[in-house]
Image (cartoon, rainbow, N blue to C red; front, top):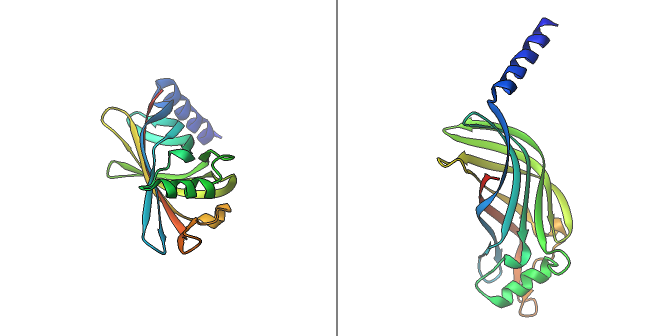
Length: 191
């Protein structure tokens, strides 16, 4: 019983002293790229409109935990080198009915600090083309000198896992592979 009271007193002391701070963060800058293969060549398409909102807890100058994270990518901001390919992407992703790709974090599974960066495993719901899947993301976080926080990572997926038919062109002669990799770098700022 004394041990429990002692732990409660320590936690209360930390909260009163203000070392643990929950802060709201929002998007500052981002780079999101979807890459894959086809029967013709490999391809890569950046997304130009990405929004994020997060609730992070800091312990002094350290990232203690990610309480929540919401990320959305506007489908029609995904641009390839060719407009005709863009139309195929938007059609495959059912962009008219599902204009956003989203990730809603459900829980942070782990966080570990190594060499000034944080290795995070987060679990959440990713929704693409109206189909939701539970996924784990391995993310690296870094607190920048100005206080912004940068998250980086990538996730390999199959389009068909989200009920997306890989795009085709030229009457099916050119076919996109089912495997894609989504790579991201997201910087968030307080506020």
